[in-house]
Length: 208
Image (cartoon, rainbow, N blue to C red; front, side, top):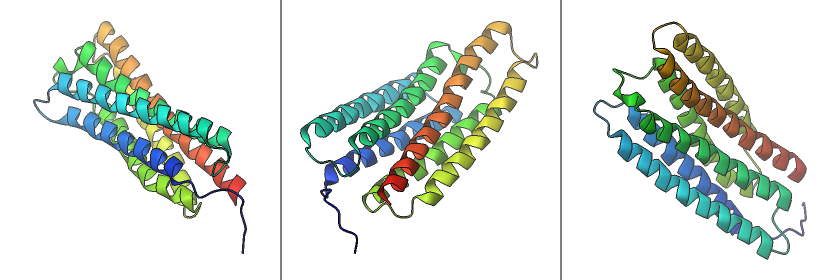
């Protein structure tokens, strides 16, 4: 039987889980942009609210790290994981804000490839939220990081096809510049989910 001096400190796992569930809220809000007659300002405002909630969770996590003598696993990894989950939320909020501020939803429709990228993010968010509670036991996590990496590859393909469409001549130059910035944030969010998964893999290997 494996013996560990590390405490069973549930607060860290609860904070990771809460942060990941906020990412699901974020991607679900972005999915609303595909609905006809969507109130884009409302989506953007609600994304900002969720991002503020995520900032508070990250702040609580850092306070917990600093006030806990022995953490359940390496405190640098706890800090890194919390920071990376917050990074994903920052990118999701940026997508909603840019779409609203740039007036891009006044177009007849957003590119199909943009919605495909958002769908990839939604899948990444959901499996990340399912994985976070499993950090307690460090079991059943391998499928999670493999699937996130696979989805990141799907996101890369959708991003490249989105760029092809943007530079096809379908849109005027200013619209292309605006949508390219949104596309970059979507792609960065996909990468950020992969960074979270890679950190989880590192933690699981260290703790095995």
